[in-house]
Image (cartoon, rainbow, N blue to C red; front, side, top):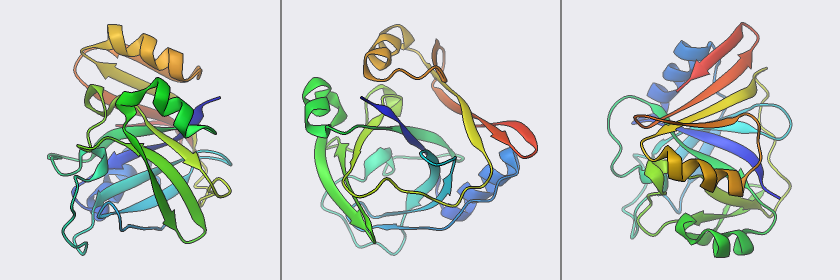
Length: 200
């Protein structure tokens, strides 16, 4: 069974991404850390007991890598935006066998967290990142500072929605997820202490 895990807002810098979140939603991002294997770092905020979101950016202190970064961060340009989303599974190997376009399973750790994640060799997920990354938590699922927001809608717009929609429906059953035709965009609707806000 697959469930929604988190979404990732990509930005040139963490400060710029955090400002974008606060401007659109009034929410303040929590602390984060570094992904040494991918040369990135992030800020994290909980969306209840089992979901969260992150701001992610290239770590300027990271040494040169021998592979592309995940989430297509080597090519990103422009203002912050939701670049990717991540689906949780309890059997990553079986899921990758069904969806090989998700990439190869790689192992990660940070502090008490241990996880495996499918990452394409070129760092670019299908459908311009609208196809999700796949993750399996090998430690207890993470719990991050709860900022009082809940995810109530997750809208994906893509020129190839006619193909993407059925593909995602075969992967995850989540009534908050919608897929429509049009220029590429991912938008999360959040129920916040100040009412509903849309983050894109």
